Every structure is written in C-alpha cells, then in structure tokens.
Length: 322
Image (cartoon, rainbow, N blue to C red; front, side, top):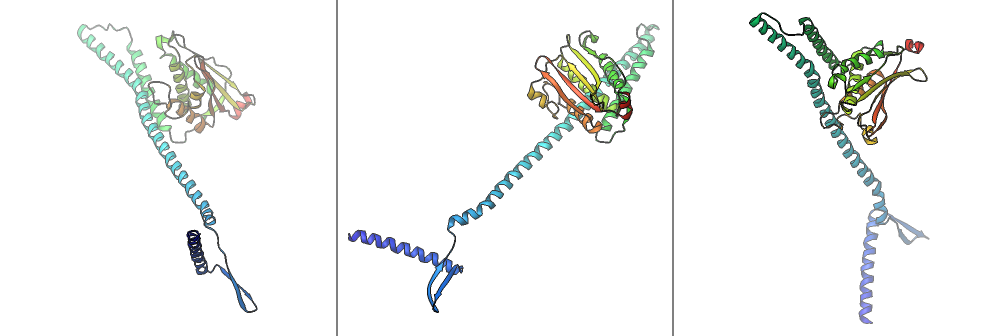
C-alpha cells in the first residue's frame, strides 16, 4: 500500500506540475478572467484552445499549399508538353517542306538529264532518237516549277491571315484529285479516286490552303489503301439548313479504332511506321482556323475503311444557289 500511495503521489505531482505550466502559459497570454465577489478575488478562470484546435486551424493553410503545389507541378508539366509538341511540329514542318520540295526537284533533275543526254546524242549522230518531244519536256518542267512556286506560297501562308475569295469548292477538289491521279501506283490501274462534279458550291476560301488540306486528306487515304484494290470516293453536298458545304472523303483502307480516331488530328500522332503525323493536324488547322469550318472522323472501322467529313460555311451567293 505504501508503494502504491507513493506512485499515486508522484503521478498527482506530475499532473499538478503540468497543469501549473499550462496555467502559466495561459496567464502570460492573458487568457484568464478574474471572478470577483464582494471586492474579493473569488477565483481565476483560465481559458484556451486545446492543441487539436490549433492543428485544425492550420489545415486550410496546409490544403492550400498542397493544392498550389499540384497546380504548379501540373502547369510545369503542361508547359513542357506544349514545348515538346511545338518542337515536334517545327521538326515535322521542316521534314514536310523537304518532302514537298523533293518531288518536283527530282522531276526537274530528271528532265534536265534527259535534255542533256539528248544534246549529247545530237552531237554524236546528228539525230534525236528520243520519242518525247522537247515541247512536252518543257511543258512538264514548267509544271514542276509551278508546283515549287505553289509549295513556297503554301508555307508562306502558315502563320499569317490569308485572303479569302469566293470559289466553287468542287473546282479545288477536282484539281487536287486530278493531280494525285497522275501519281497513283500502277498509273491508276490499282487505286481509284472517284469524284463527280455536281452543282457549284460557292465558299469563301484561300485556294492554296484549301487545296493543301484536300491533298493531305487524300494522301492520307491513299496511304491507308491497298495499292491494287484501293478506292477513294469524294462526295459534296449542302447541309440541311443550307448554311454549310459538306465534303466526305471515304476510303476502303485499314480503318481506325475509336482510340486512333480520337487522336487522328493531334500533332505528331501517326499510325504509320514512317511519318511525322502532321498531315491531318495541318488539315484541321487550315479548315478550322483559316476557314471557320470543321473536320472530323464521321465513321471508321478497322479493316473496313474511314470516312472524313469537312464542313465549310457557304457564302450568301452559295445559299441562294443552294
């Protein structure tokens, strides 16, 4: 009993000492009230918040700090992603420029070599044995030079506000389709591009940029098709409210999964082994930003093909005609 009384006394003494320490802290903070009765100090009441309340008061500050940290980390990550995307775009644009310029330059070099060999033959035998007339060679060289001028004009329009003129959009489609038909595999015996002009559809567009958009879209369809059995069909019509021209480009190529269709217009995304994934992204920019239109994947299934749809606002003259 004596040992237990000693332990209890020690506990009471420690508790009393801790209470006195807390009271001293409260008194130093003037967290006390004197209770006076009959001009005599009856007792002194101390008050204060427990440690848990003070910790809870700090919680909003901690939460704001954590949220701010995640916002800063997210912003930095998003900025890095945008910078990487821009780097990919610039690299891809440089690659696309080289690719666009390569075809007409190679053609010009070939024609020049043919003309050079013809002059050598004339010098040796005095007889031109080549079956291609010089006039035709010069005509094709002129066409290649025109192609180079068009490519330079297209790239110069990127980043600026292009001039829009009212034209029949079917003229641009037919011009682009004819240009690509001449460069189809097997001289067009395998892949077919089908388009039949109907009534004019007047749209305010930049001819160079819109032609570039159609060209990118058709090239994408050609790359998705089989070289022997590929079919690309282009249709144009007015929307039901007669406010838009709807252009559908359908192919019977490899098609896309829903996930691929959602990412089709993202810069740098491609399902091909070779390529920079800029064709559809550039087409989307030309249609949406420069022509206030819309382009989307209307339908696509793996192995069954893909249909893209372009919607362009028509002019007042086009509305009257439609």
